Each structure stands twice: as C-alpha cells, then as structure tokens.
Image (cartoon, rainbow, N blue to C red):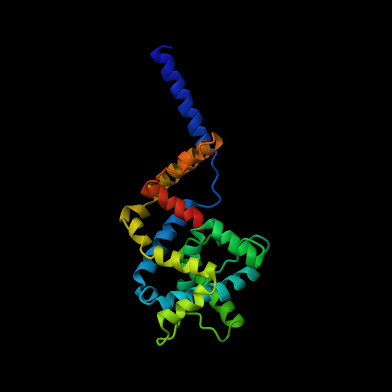
Length: 243
C-alpha cells in the first residue's frame, strides 16, 4: 500500500471516528452544569463551618437521608425532578452521594422504588427561586426542623458518628463526604470556568466515552480501567455523574 493510500485510509478512519464521537449523546448541558458545579464547589470550600466539626457533616447526612430525600421523592412527577434545591449542607451530601452512581441508585431504589434525579438549574436567578421554594415546602412539612444546619454545639463528634455507623450505607456517605472535602482544589483554576474551555472539554469527554465504549465492545474492559482522564475530562465526568 502506498503512502497516499495509507493516508487515505487514516483520513477516512479519522472522519469515521469523529462521526462516531458526535453520535455520543449527553442528557444535560454539560457546559452550563460544569460552570455551576465549579461555583458550587467553591462555595462549599469557602464554607468552613461545613467542615470544622464532623458532627456538622453527620447532621447534614441525617437531614439529607431523613428529610430531604423523602421530600424531593414526593415532589417528583413521574421521572421528572422537582425544581427545588436543598440548603447547602444537604446539597453537598447529595453531590457526594451521586459521585457513586451505583450506590446512589441502589439507595434510591431500596428506599423510594425509583431513581431520584436532579433538576437542571444552572443560573443564579432560578437557583435562588428553587432554594426559596424548597424552604417554604420544608417548613410546611417539617415545622420542627430548621431549614439550616443547626447542630448542637455540645454534640460530640464521637456521639454523632455513632448515629451514622448504625447504618452502613450512611457511613459510606460520610466517608465519601469527608474524602471529597477538597475537591474544589482540582477545578479552582480561573480558566476552567471559561466557556470555550468547557466546550472543548465536553468534546474531549465525548471522545473519552467513545474510547471507553470501544474497549468494552472489543472485550477489553480491563484495559479501559487503566485509562486516567485529564483534568478537563475529569470535570465533565464528575459533572455528568452528579446529574
């Protein structure tokens, strides 16, 4: 085969692969979602009260498990998520829990017999309304429960952890929340919020998904497990998981 013929084959293959990558469909606007995620992670990082005491995190998990998830489950219409957002501590637990999709799905199906999805709310105005609406619904349903995390100052970390470890699944959530505390540091570079960067990252993420699928289709799942995403692809991957 001549050099020209080889070039022609490679060119045709490249066009085919580009076409296949374009066929990868994403269920959400990853660019807007990623920008929103970076802002959210920054807020979590700056909210030191959320990390200073383990009892605060444990209380957040209790509020997530006993209050928020039953509430948002009842608000769902079919498979459509309710357009409400929980308080910061609860949303942080929700974020961390969904980073393990298999565990999250198992939790939802075991407790609610359905998967609890997240609303696609990516702008500040709608976020503010969704939070206010949630507070109204929360207070009506739980008049004796504060909308904000008000863990008692005299509640020790050890006694708080005992409450969680009674449920193995909740302990897994606790460990995940603690592990992800510094996640924002990975995505804190200013350029990572730029639209052009995120558009390119989305395209590279789609190519990454296509590559993973190619390994699976050819029975090389063990090889795909050795693939390490670059930072821009990781941002899209994390964003895709939590939505």
